[in-house]
Length: 211
Image (cartoon, rainbow, N blue to C red):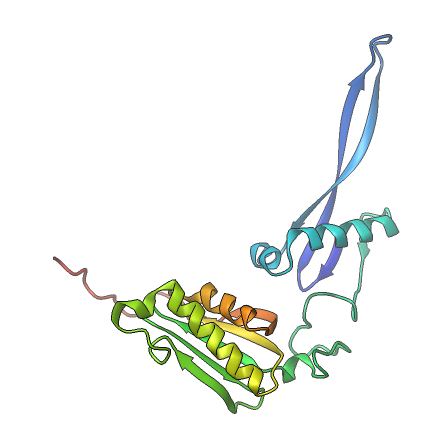
């Protein structure tokens, strides 16, 4: 078992395969190692860093030791951002992880609002689908969200912002199109966070509209 970091764990599983020869009835067994990954939110991990990077990291770790319980600590070279309050020597554009600007993406069913703020809370850029010229039902389209993300990234670049943290709020259709626009503008996304509030059986929803 290889503990990468932040709860992501790679397990090694020994798989035995048997092959028989034509001249003898004896079988020879070969053992191979397969890497499977699990832990906290593996889908988000693969979406961020790609399955090929995870496979390469697991292969490199497996070649160093054959033990099943080897804990690997990559304090400086890990691709995973540090946890809050964790001391790390990694820097992005000369800044710590806590000092990076934050991009808040509010994705509702009817609009997508993007605000870029510095670490101290001061606003750097603010835009939405309506500000970019989309009206009525077009504000909820994918094209409008991507255009808004591109505009927000361009405004942030003018404030000398290169690396950002992205925080999602809402489950509207403009979540990832807005992120695509930010990446297209040239911003380097360091981390993705979903801050969508979930009710614990709170207020009673509205009745279904009858047409």
